[in-house]
Image: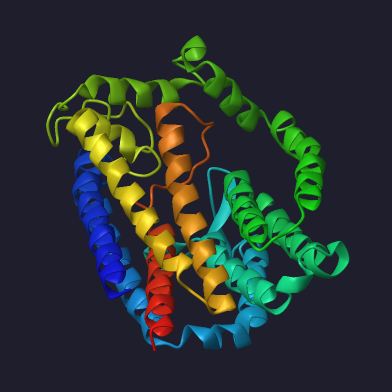
Amino acid sequence: MRDLRISVLVLMTVLICVGIVMIFSSSGVYALQELGSSYYFLSRHLLFLLMGAILMVAFMAIDYRELRRFAKPILLIAIFSLVLVLIPFIGKEINGARRWFRLGFISIQPSEFTKIAVLIYVADFLSRKHNKIRDFREGFLPIMLMLGVVCLLILKQPDMGTALFIAAVVLILIFVAGARLLHLGLIVLLSLPLIYLLIAKVAYRMHRIMAFLDPWQDSQGVGFQLSQSQIAIGSGGLFGLGLGKSMQKLFYLPAAHTDFIFSIIGEEMGLLGTSAIILLFVLLIWQCARIAKRITYSFGYFLSVGIVAMLGLQAVINLGVSIGALPTKGLPLPFISYGGSALMVDMIAVGLLLNISRTQEL
């Protein structure tokens, strides 16, 4: 599987390099105007990239099978961090959301690292009780209880997008493990009224849904971000306006260097550029899936499947939001968007996958 590992590393590196260029292109003017330096976001992104590379190498170097011994402590630490971030004067609040720890001049988002903790725990659980996953009380219910606690704490931040994302990845993982469709369908049906209430009773979430249904009905209000995103992508045409020549990044499109960086790629690089990005992600997920398919050790198999699901679903959601096919979720584009915690977690995930692949050959 050495060729597969090399191809995954190459594809990830190409996406990271694209991200470096596009983060500077999409944020330089805004950073200069608002923060006094056009390199503000780029310099921080490079710092997070360095930290992510160190963590990735560290997770490649260890024997990943030893993580099974610490699956529960890792999950408990993640849950404790989710509780801690909700405490005033400990967690940092931005725009009404308390999701970050402030460490010097950088911020860390514990819910991002919770993704890896949950994957390790679920992979360990399934490897131990794979033959009981079809049993509701012994196999299905314990995972759902754990998932409920994690999602509830993330919803308190509030961060509905990340909570639903983690839930979706876990459901995919236990489906692959052989959970009964009746149990999966039941938990989805029971969660629908709760999701409806979480949307209908919170004004900004309802506004997001209305903007998704018809952003042009109120293009200067709730539909502003999505309509500007579509203008950016549409303005690029086939070949784009040229690198650095985006107009939407000039204080029109909010979050141009984070959640909507794909829209700026579409404007500057055109259909050819966006198609190339999509192709890179398809190849990356395909190669990662080929690695997962060849893993015979149960813990490594479930962990690698979870990593593939996490990276693939995150990319699909971000791309879907950018083009208006999905409601706004606030999930970054893996390896490309600005976002320190998410970048480090994605690199850790790839490091674990490469570790699993290498260990399989020993």
